[in-house]
Length: 396
Image (cartoon, rainbow, N blue to C red; front, side, top):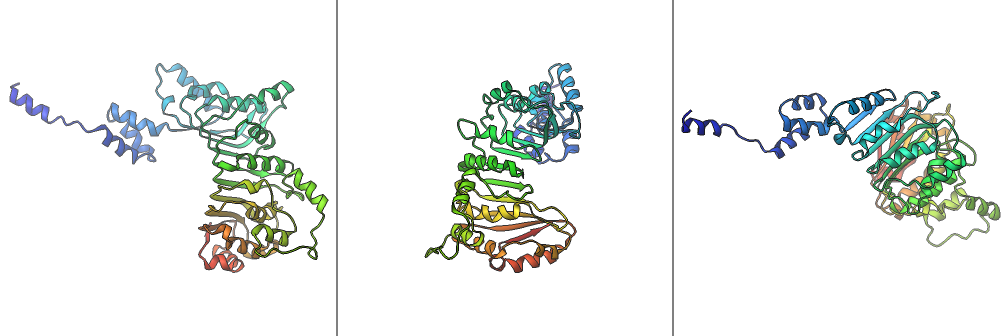
């Protein structure tokens, strides 16, 4: 081939910048079919595609073992470095065997940043902590419907104290699981973890004290809080100190109560509900959003203590930066809302107060067969000031 022909041939071999290829593939991060096609184009596209293809692994108690075997038996397996999130979908908790083998997850200890366990059994609580603490780069932990097959021995209880959350964890979720052991463990840390997002519940009566202690412990860093509450009669008791205080003071007497010249929301809470605000919740000074699930459910369902806790939260927290509040409602028809003894006037007063001057939205996520427009109109009538300010949002 002549030098002229060779020069012409080389001029047709245009190298496409890798940065532009990566940008193109990034736009396909949610299109798994296209990503698989891109991975067959060339070696550089293979690597860029795998970043998205293997970013999240959804496994079960059976496929996790198969995955570990594949990684062990495949020479120079390139999958683990790309895995950032593992979602474990277990089997019903009636199983009598542990479902989460810790060994296979050790392949991802250096890369995994998000761990979500759903419907999983562990032999003991210590086994769960061993797994969490082995993943030192975790940023978020999700625990849904976790159960323990055995109670811990004294030696195991002592060993729990030597475990601490991975240093980068900023998001915690624990739902439909035993809260007491996990909340006690987190509050036993020598330094409060920098958790900004907390999602827990349902909080049962026996766990209220531990939940209050955790909120007080994490309060300086908490920005987003999502809660659900259990059922019972004394769910409003948030600390033993409050219990003692109420027993000493007895019922507030309106005849001896001296109304301040400029009453705060805490003063109004005392006047309306005859209880002091919660000291634990008062430490929530940096909260930006609050979500309360199961705020109101149909009359044929047992009612949670959320109807008590909602005004207590709103009156107790000291965060002037709170911008979004969401309530979960599940009804069959709009008329069921009137069956619940809620002080809507107090809620409306809270949302209009100076403490909530930065509030942008008050959302209601509606579930059940209720007509969205009918319920929206009813709630807007009960919260006229918030409705006039354009705060109310409704979704189904």
